[in-house]
Amino acid sequence: MKRSLTTAMLAAGLIASGETLASPMLWQNNSLTYLYGKNFAVDSGEDGREADIQQTITFEHASGWTWGDMFLFVDNKWFNGHSGSDGHTYYGEFSPRLSLGKISGTDLSFGPVKDVLISATYERGEGRNRNYLLGPAVDLAVPGFDRLAINTYYRKPDGITGKPGGQWQITPTWAMTFPVGKSDILFDGYIDWVVNDAGSKSKGDFIAKNFHFNPQIKYDLGKAMDYAPGKLYVGVEYDYWSDKYGIEDSEAFNTDNNVMNFIVKAHF
Image 1 (cartoon, rainbow, N blue to C red):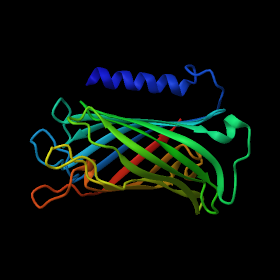
Image 2: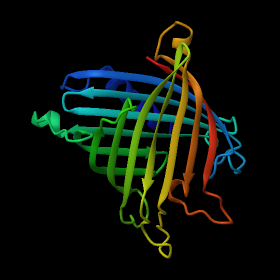
Image 3: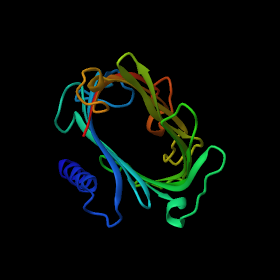
């Protein structure tokens, strides 16, 4: 697991440097985030109980290119304050998007739509937790939003016994900035809405439809301190996930996540 995580972080660093792709990079943003929360559903610590405490360090990279844009992140998670094989895991996603407007040299904007894209995502967790996603996307220009996009995916699991049929997922992402005193509040986040079940309960490959709502409210501490606007944030993240990981909720096993995290986030 450690070797896989090291490889993922190395790849993230190379991508962030812009040295591995021939197309010119137009912009990039990198960050490290620390999150602290309690009472997560499903995830367990060394004692096998629900994780009373979960701490996460996340590396994120976002960049724009002449062909589109790209986002990736890698999570390192520690459960119940423990590290080691039973209390530590990782998860990451790599999400490039191909801009049809950029590669065709055509203005595809209409109404609130700024651009039409093809979006892909590779999800990778510990062990055999892998998913491939592909589908159309639109970038939108809506008053009040710094950024608003809607990605629509067909998601297909890999490494699962029986390989159940795929699912459809709708993923809006957004960012909004609100001036507060001498600084700003940043409200951003995403929704992953998997709209249909897949597989069969009788065959043991069932994946339930699920809804993951993950907004963050952060205060620009760097700007408030006259240090570096947009570089240092503190705030909270709300993590609601019904039927987490596609595991159907039941009286015997709670899989509905409802957690508030404390956040410190530094951009570089």
